[in-house]
Length: 434
Image (cartoon, rainbow, N blue to C red; front, side):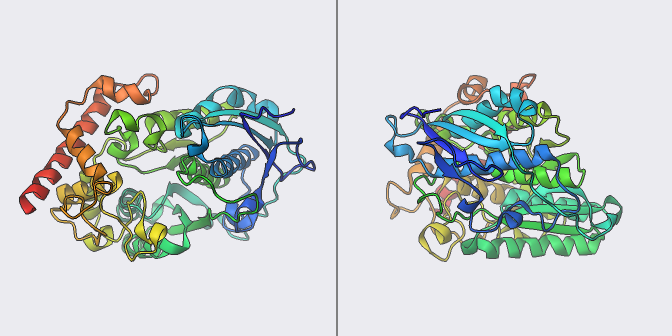
């Protein structure tokens, strides 16, 4: 089991008595700052999670840590890496089909890297004592709640449009110290809607902060982060016998079409791309899992998502407190802004609020159309304008990442074109304002 020097080999230590073969780097729950119980939500779930869901989350956590320990820029093409990952699971035979096909394909779609999975027998099972609570504590609906505009809109709709008869709505969140106020502010808005409608609301807030136990972070792109989030929500849903996990993302950013050829493949994130969700659900079915992951906003533009939120009764001021930024200034540079205003997600946000609400009073760090902005910071704005000046076809849609089998490209193409209409309106607004 001597590793190939061109392959980065990682061995998950927990639930196994061994330390791994020579040359394999260790990863484990110690790579996160919080205890395993806190990370997995053992303290908040009604019932014990099934073994397959525990396994899926363990694999996602191992992938997340391994990804952060290998710098892309040190590779020959400054991007693509090769990984070998060994993780203990409850039943390797049950995972054999997934490990041989859909799981490596899922990871490659997410990261643009090549992954080889070795799933070995676990020597101990995670322990979870059920909460001393009745059936009223069990969730009936589970959704990711990131603090972004899309997940806020979906949570607002579910909190406001459903009554107490629909049971507990469980929102799964990940906290970060520098931007934890965002989650608190927008959750308060959802909680107010739930109070008025009579919907029971519960939040499971976990952490993803690394501890540095296995080395310093060398890669900050963190493409597998979406899988970690989804696997955590899937595990929570499986523990509470919920059949569907909602991962809300507007169709524009779910497809995330590259603005230029230089941004192809993993240079545009694919966390909620239709193919990503298809592969994740294929993995879950392969291990006989009971949960399906869906994007309820897949056919909506950002503007339509904004309109849905305000129609549900969410104040515009709460929408404007959400965080959509790909590189939040507060997190990256310690500045007092949650949204930079110039990255591609921020441009989609600007166009969506303008189209859906007629105004946008988000306190951005800056605007991409300002003459004083450096060429580097205006890069996304220039690329966007160039992209909008060209036709976008079905060939463009499937040229970067293929769609799932049985998908009608025309339906997705319409989502992109509707989004381009909103973005063109933003460009016209900026030109007239400037």
